[in-house]
Structure formats: structure tokens, C-alpha cells
Image: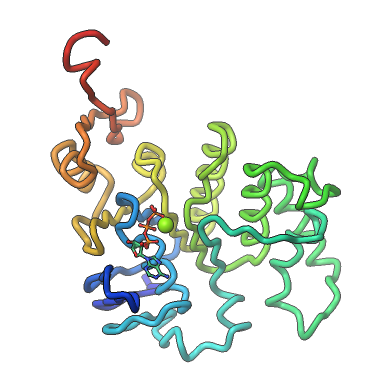
Length: 267
Ligand SMILES: Nc1ncnc2c1ncn2[C@@H]1O[C@H](COP(=O)(O)OP(=O)(O)OP(=O)(O)O)[C@@H](O)[C@H]1O
Ligand SMILES: [Mg+2]
């Protein structure tokens, strides 16, 4: 199977020298959902920004369909790769429909008007993300979670072959969070590559085909969820008392937080 994107031995340090991402190699394939997990500050967003070409690795390289990411023109790159950053706070004076429509601009020359195909994609994307009831609202009047869903919709409207999302489920309620994961999984099954950064280890275990676990800028483990998510490893990396059991229905790993209350028998 042809890889969509590869990072080969990528290392990167910010100018202040306090954080170093260390020699990350990974391959992203079509038709698969790939999860990046790890504690706060472990380098997940940094890695994603390297994958998008926003940050240049100090060592190693990133290729998209075998070509250096740097060699792509922006528009050409945006037709292949859509990126949802962590906590974007755009101050759009636009309606939800217009914000979702921004995802179509990589296909337009200059400020080209949206055509019928674009409008159909926007309709479908609003529907897929359950944003249709919000379509006429101004983005600036939405709640935090509603904005997040609309931003997910706008990257989906880009119809990329690779989707990179940094915590798309953050600030979403349990219905919308599980809906986003359902949607990302379904998109991967339609043949695109999807990479998602998440702190929700149980959703990651349930939905992702492969995980990479980062800690302090290093890859600690990579593989299927059951290979990466063991109680001893997660407890060590997160410095928390965690127990991993098998989900009774799906057999996927399921993380439980242990603590004084449970350990001392007062649970
Ligand atoms: N622009 C920057 N300049 C200097 N240091 C930075 C910059 N951006 C991030 N860092 C530092 O690099 C480290 C990794 O940050 P990164 O944002 O990749 O972590 P993360 O794994 O995404 O964390 P979180 O789960 O909190 O989003 C952190 O220590 C952070 O403080
Ligand atoms: Mg982050």
C-alpha cells in the first residue's frame, strides 16, 4: 500500500532549547486512523506541525506521496492535506456555512466563487458533522464546543486525502465527541488517512488502528492500541496510577484511574 505521509527520523528543538522532539519516524497509510497520544507537553502538537510543514525539522525529513513536503505549493498541499490546529481562535465575522465554505478555497483560483459542487460538499459536511441547524448562525455567536464542531466541518469540506486534527474532541460533550470519532473512523474507511491527537485514551483505543505514544519528545511505543496501552507503561508515562482492562464488548484496552479512594477500599 502506498504511504501518504512519512516522517523519517525527525528531530526538532524550539529556539529556547527547552524542548526537543527526538528522531520521530512514522508512516501514515490511506484507510487508517492513526492516533497520537501522550501527556501535556510531550510534543504531539509539535509533531503534527512538522507533518504539515509549518515547522521544519532540524534533522530528518517529511514526505507526502514520496515528495518532500517543502516542495509542494501551498494550494497543491492544501488539496491533499487538511489541518485542524489545537485551540484555534479565529474571529470570523462569517456565518457557519461561510466558515465551512472556506475549506473549499484550495480548489479555487484567487477569490473564485463557490460553485454547485462546492455547495453540495458544504451541505453534506454540515450534515455529517450535525452542524446543519447552525448553518445560518454567525460563528462568533457560537459556544466553544459548537465552534469546534464547525472548525472540524471546515477541514472536512477540504476533502483532503490526509486529515490531521489536533484534539478535535476537546470541549465537546460525550455525544459530539463520540460522533467526531465515528466520523473520522468512517472517513478513514472511505480511504483517506486520518491522524488525530487526543487525550481521550479510551476513544483512541476503540477507534484507532495504530497509536504512537510520546513522552518528553520521544516515541515511547508505537503499534496497535493493545500493544501501546498497558497499565504499567501508561502509569509510568502519565505518572498516575492507571489500570488497563479489556472492554467487555469490544476487548479494546480500557483505562481506569485508580486512586486513594479506590485503593483504600472506600470506593
Ligand atoms: N513556540 C514555542 N516555543 C517554545 N517552546 C514551545 C513552543 N511551542 C511549544 N513549546 C514547548 O514544547 C513542548 C511540546 O509542546 P507541544 O505543544 O508539542 O505539546 P503537546 O504534547 O501538544 O501538549 P498538550 O497536550 O498540552 O497540547 C512543551 O514543553 C511546550 O512548552
Ligand atoms: Mg498540543
